[in-house]
Length: 59
Image 1 (cartoon, helix red, strand yellow):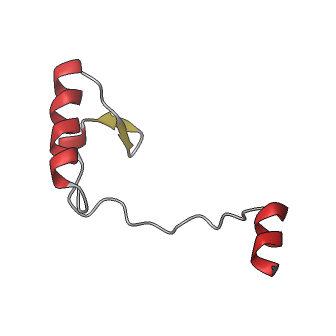
Image 2 (tube, helix red, strand yellow; image 1 turned 30 degrees about the vertical axis):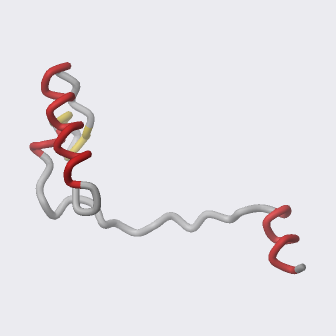
């Protein structure tokens, strides 16, 4: 929503048309356009790239 508002709006409309509640908030499924403006922005998961990635960083 913040970075791609047009895409968010399009997906929100599509989910309403299809009746697809794509988000789970507080244990309840909701439509995208019901998502609070300040939702998200949580901690990024620390993901390791693995041995091949490490090798490319070393050379």
